[in-house]
Image (tube, rainbow, N blue to C red; front, side, top):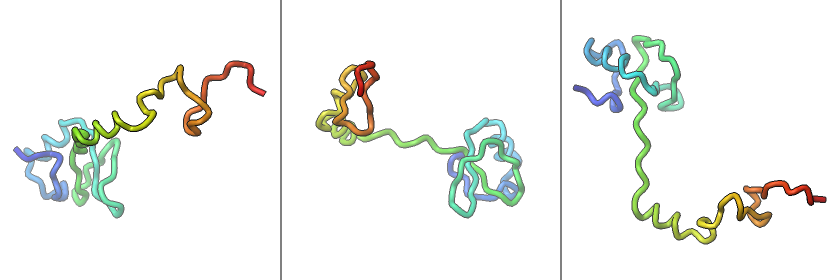
Amino acid sequence: MVDLTKITTPYGLLDEATQKALKEHGGPYEYYGISGWTFVRNPEWHQTCTYHVKPQPPKPSAACLAMLKAWPGMEHQTPNKWSKSNPLVLPPATGDEP
């Protein structure tokens, strides 16, 4: 069986079993266009277009997870600890604002 996330052949050139497996998978799908691989909600299954099942994003490495855990202040960013010092996250309104 072909890995449906690694297809690089136009749909019309795939064997019938692969075409059927691709359609029955249910997605999410991507097609290859001028901008590279692009999400497509409802493929039209054109014979000249290349479709594949969208690959799962890679899992973060242990080093990445350790870095996020050690990031200064990030472990304290919970809704009850928001502050104006973080410009991306505003504190909840209290009614005392000017």
